[in-house]
Amino acid sequence: MPELPEVEHLRRTLEPRLLGRRVVDATLHRRDVAVGPKDPPGGFARQRAVVRPSRLRAAQLLADATIERVDRRGKLLAIIASDGRALGVHLGMSGQLFWAPAGARLPTDHVHATWRLDDRSRLLFRDPRRFGGLWLAETRDELPPWRGLGPDALTLPPEHLAGLLAKARRPIKAALLDQGLLAGVGNIYADEALHRVGIHPAELACEISAPRALRLGEALRELLRLAVEAGGSTLRDYRAAEGQAGAFQLQHAVYGRAGQACLTCGEVLESGMLAQRTTVWCPRCQGGL
Ligand SMILES: [Zn+2]
Picture 1 (cartoon, rainbow, N blue to C red):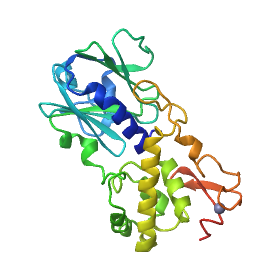
Picture 2 (cartoon, rainbow, N blue to C red):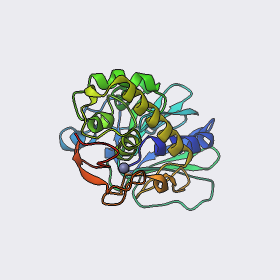
Picture 3 (cartoon, protein in one colour):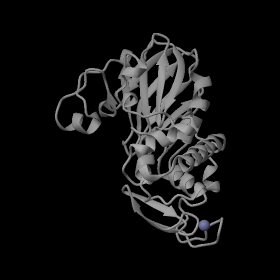
C-alpha cells in the first residue's frame, strides 16, 4: 500500500504537470469509486449497499476548472482548482494517478476516471483492487477524509510526537498506524522507524518517555524524508505519475525481512501480528517486553 513517501513523491511529480492546466473534460467510468457532496456518509461500501448515490456531473470532477495546486495530508492527495474546489484522491491498496502526455499510449484496464487537460495530456485514476477512491467537495477542508486526519507525519515537529503518544493507551505500532492520530505512516515506515530507535512495537505508546518519543519523531521524519527522495518504496503496485518505480524498498532494514539477520546486530528478526498487520522487529535491538 502506498504510504506517505510514495504519495508525496507522486504529488511532486504530478504537480508541475497539472499546474495552471485547464481541465477540458472529466469522465467517471465507475460511479462507485467517487463520493460527491450529496452522497450519504460512510464511503463507497455503504453507497453500494444502501442508497442510490446522487448523480455526479463532470463539473464536480473539476471539468472547466484550472488546477492551482496539489496538496497532500498523510496518504491523501487533494487536487485544488483556482475556484477552491477540491478533488480528494486516495490510492488505497493499488490505486494510481497516471499522467500521460499528448499522443502517449494509455493503459485501459481498471481505469475508473479520466481527465483531459488543455495541453492534450491526460490524467487517469486506476485502481484494480478498488480500496482507493475519489472525493469531491467545494473546498479542501470539506473533504471528509481530509477532516479526519491527524497532523502530517512529514511536517510534524518531532517534539510534538510525545504529546500525541501520551493519549494513546495502545501498542506504539497501533498508534503509529492510526491516521487520525498521525497521518501518513503505514506498516513499512512504522516498523522501520521503531527499529531505528530500538523501541519494541508492542510497547504501550503512552509509556514511551518524552526523550524516546523525541528520538522516534526525529527518526520517523528522517526516514520519510529519505524515502520521498528515493521515490518511495515499490512493493507491488505503487508507481509515480508516469509509471516509474520507487527505490526505497532496497533500504528496508526490517520490513519484509522476518527470519533474516538484523543488519545492526545479526540477531534473527522476529515477526508477529500487531494491529492486524504483520510486524517485524529485532528481539535484541528492540528489547523484550
Ligand atoms: Zn538487532
